[in-house]
Image (cartoon, rainbow, N blue to C red; front, side, top):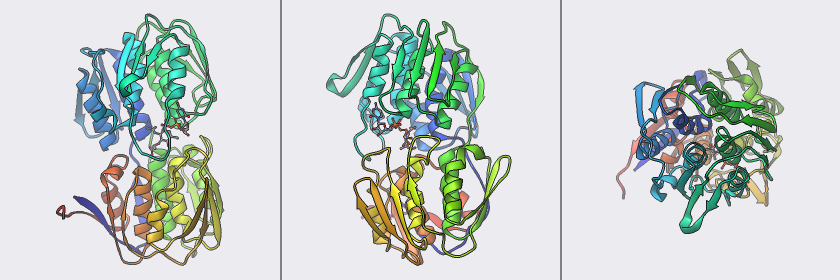
Length: 423
Ligand code: EPZ
């Protein structure tokens, strides 16, 4: 069993280079099936979620290779669409449900066991189903498997009742080959939605308006292979920005799109942290004592990302004053706070709000990663805390952070991956 062991208290200084975006890579790799021939995808992060998506594509007959670091080639000429993607795969990767939209659109059928993924409250897929049915598909969810079928898909208007990244993506995937015009309203606007649209258009699709709340898609009959490079990971970058601020360091986060980080940069500035934007970098300077307390509320892009909530709350535990964190996207994303309390954090949770009373510092303790971003928060807490913190369940962190030990060590963190025998 592996754990991270962190000896906290070091200021982070230097440069961290950001990898490709997990939440763009997953739908893009799935969508490469549309090509029916080789697609070369670059800047692919080497993380376990991407390896799992590749495994699922191979399971349905695609040939997936990694000819060089960060490059994936998917050849989907031999896809067998009538294979059910089983629970033992989908429970490991919630994003496997993107294959519903792709296979339905390309072959008229798909069968995927109900998805798993991080658990922070109910994670329904009613809006995905609404989109498929609006385009003319029949959907059956008996036996915990989502079966979608259609003779033909026809363009339609789809109003999403809730801003949903996954449902927006699945609606886009299902619509790219539907006959006629599809209009998706109340669409999610995340950077990874725009990246997927650009990838689909590189394969010959006609997707317009991605990044706004209205996406218009004209169905096409043929799509082809392409070469495409994935955008940098907004949440990986934000995580290291917060780590730099939390340790009182001075770090350049390189290979980013600063505009994608605006809500995070603004919140750090609210805390008195200096953020200097370059063309493809942000520099975080936090050498002036404890950060100021502030109020954070998560919301869909361009608001403050829910996937940054645990990490930012960890910074707020040592801020000077009382902060509030409101989680407005998920209905139960404060589970990690129990772990922070073990390290001396002073937090009261009341419904969707966490009330944080800043303390001078945290103290080391053995903790567990409850999910991917909660695990990232534990790493930040370990970097802050005096003493030796060990973190368990780190496979959850490896789902979304490429080379996290190497990247943090390079800027002065004392962190290592240690193997312990089971007992
Ligand atoms: C994506 O999950 C991300 N995962 C999540 O990041 C992220 O937290 C989330 O978007 C919000 O940004 C991937 O991209 C792989 P949603 P997704 O559909 O698509 C409700 C990470 O750490 N909803 O945008 O599953 C839902 O309950 C992961 O990288 C419905 O009600 O999230 C939630 O309250 C964790 N019905 C809200 O919408 C539906 O059919 C947003 O969920 C779908 C969603």
